[in-house]
Image (tube, rainbow, N blue to C red):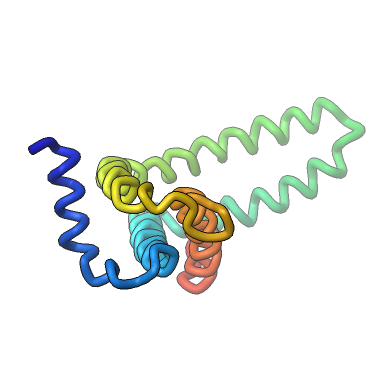
Length: 149
């Protein structure tokens, strides 16, 4: 038995209750659950205060940069300042990636094995596109509700 067969067997066992549902319905529920988990991991592994502050400062700096479009030197100075702050935020953003990368790679392997045989599931889209589109929509909603920055 290969690793792929083991992963598929595990997913068939855990996703058994969804097997009687339509592929689109079960995929949307799985997308919602995974997006919620990802958002919670992101929220609790990043410094939300720093992220909020950066978001506010970033908007302010973009406005200032619009006013400085005629002065390239000051614009470069502001751009450098923004890049430095961006690096701090990127460091924060890598923390959740460390926790989620391997588990999600395994999950996507299992999902592919389960949903690929269905071909186009909804609106002529394959399972991966349905997952991506629905997870983006769910992420926007969940981030607003949970106040994740």
